Image 1 (tube, rainbow, N blue to C red):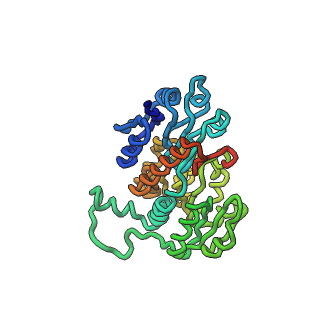
Image 2: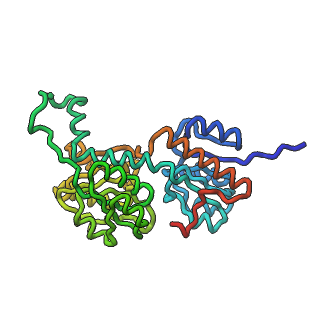
Image 3: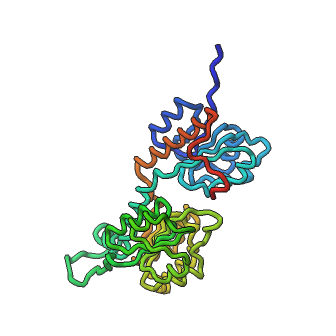
Length: 334
């Protein structure tokens, strides 16, 4: 009696141990145990040999990879909420199913966004560095030293009121912030009432009136440099920008220039336009206490990563069983 051959699944980065173990049980899984990022050539080779590719948000699966004459892929099961690293239209045209891992990162990303909303006005990183880096002797408490700003009563403008934007709004409202948002369309009246949220059809008008701007929209062709040079110049001098979405949504060079000139109060960033490279000017601004920088760790919880892996496995198994995967992504959805 012949044994049915398991499909070859190539995983581009190291995943939680429990997920890798389960993948080996279910599939002919080729894992990346040392977590070294795959080169474009290695990704192209994987597309020529694997039935299913499991990339992460830093792996670029572009048209040239998908349209190789000998591309063998039947499915791209992205380990990530976004799919801006994949040419979904090219995959769809070739009959390759694309899936992602939505919903599981909402709370983790919203927690980090709220932490960054607090970090800049209260000078948290700047204060901590005084004790840990030894550059300055701390003489003790003083009435006028390390003064920041309270956030209660301030206006928060959320760019993108999807699941993460709404989760940020719930947290921010508990801190006494006034909730404003711009989205492609207003949220349901029940949600707006729950959040006490004011909808702005014009992003320009909202940006010009907010104390804090939080970017929570996905990166798509329509949102590339959504906060363009022109729009960034609308932001008030005392305001600051928080980005835990994608670096490409903001014109980073202009943001830096405006902060350097004192035309924007500051920024708190977890993502960058040219990751993994971080603009040295941003690092200098961080050392000056003007910005807070984190290394793309907004969704970095053990629970979140395991849930992402479980979604990847469910999507693959559903597809291999000839059913529609629950998290299938189509070009019309983007």
